Amino acid sequence: MAKADSLGQFEQLVLTAILTLREDAYGITIHEKVQELAHPKSVSLGAIYVTLDRLEDKGMVASRLSDPTPERGGRAKRYYHLKGTGEVALQEAALTAKRIWDVTSEAWGRGWGREVRLCVPVRRK
Amino acid sequence: MRAGPPKIIETAVGLLLPPSAREHVLGDLRERYVDSRHYLADALSAVPGVVAGRLLRTTDFQLRAMEAGLLYLSFLVAAWAVLGARYVCLHAGFVRLLGPVALAFVALIVGDIYDGGRRRAPVVAAGLGVGCAAAVSRANAAFPGWILLWGGALGLALVSTLRMWFPPGGNRPRGEVL
Picture 1 (cartoon, rainbow over the protein chains, first blue to last red):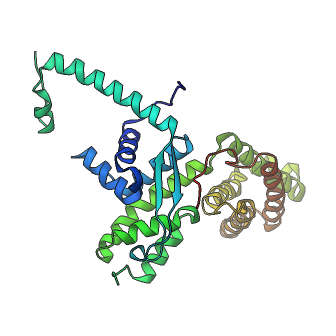
Picture 2: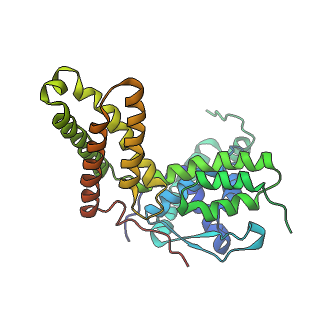
């Protein structure tokens, strides 16, 4: 299996958004999904575009322009989809995250995730 | 029909966007349109990211370093030919040349971002750079116009030749356009 480039956290979020949106992944929907995944942090639209460009340059995603639509003032959408290297990189990132989750759950107990979601700093002995 | 942003605002935002991203980014902004204030806020959030993305895409650091070197050489040769070696050496000419070179270099980068793949950036850069440098020079009496003219023309020739050998961003993946 080809060795994939390592991904930053924000790149992981964008790739995850593209993966889950499947055929409907374009600027606005990706932004909404990333905002949902990054909650409670807010994400700017510009950060999405710059990351999509970077991922396209890395060869992890590809894009195509759709036909223009009237609700967009006759302008096209740029749809994105994952390429093989992008999927490999995302799988590696997900496996690493799972290993971290397993280890931290063991160390801090199974219920700690709920406290983290409430933004309460967790400190257990 | 769904309401859209005022034409003048949309046109202004479109001018700030690089041509390669104009179509889909303007469409995205239009889709999110609620009112002019939100549209402007969205545009202010999106445009820097799009420009930064384009800047990273069009920047090859080795090529940029070579271009900066060639631009400096061009203006240096022009200054040397017009004013003579003595003037360049004794009046901090080496340092003062950095002004027009920096302007031409910035213009080259901006030209690449907004070139839309037409590869006219050296022409745009030479024009803008020489124009800006001439304006600054006129205000500060830094350099005679001939130096800027000859330096700009030589820089244009050298940078264009360099780009024929090493096309910028030529081997990068690009999104397929249907």
